[in-house]
Picture 1 (cartoon, rainbow, N blue to C red):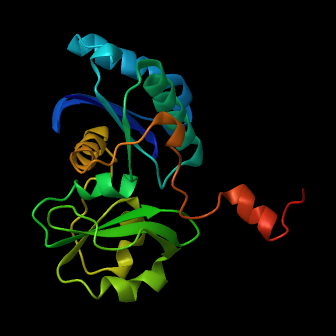
Picture 2 (spheres, rainbow, N blue to C red):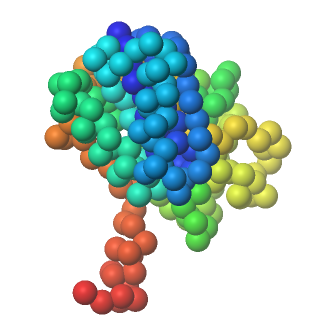
Length: 222
């Protein structure tokens, strides 16, 4: 099975091709502002360098959040177009799930993505990268008591890097959200029968966008 994986939730635009859950090739560009310009050329480069094409793809895996609202919409719109043209099943995976794979051999893993204003997105995983908590969005200080319930919890992500003064952990792990890990998550979900169709693919919002929050508190008007 050829698995095309796409990640656009962060400042890294990442695309990869996997055979089942084994990465064939991955390409990354770190510049969030150019996702709309770079995603399609990056995918073309990926196909050309592997002598594969969209017709060879049996599954598309993509991240659906949390992360950049603009980046996620660009990625999901691209996946929808590909899936509809070739009738390819799709899998949506959380960027938090993918981030957890940046740590191996830890009893518990916490993915932390910075959401600004002291807020973070987070989720906790076991040593096999299985989700064992809810997906959460909260003030970092409100989450500390939850983290204390897990033994040997290792943190990864730019949310940890920003708030590392709150933790005793000294290791800093790679905070890049890699598409190859989206592909691994996608294949795991495929084996569990969790595929969907392009029309049902959507962004997972753990909190409202900045514009929606400003509208809700009266900062901006209709």
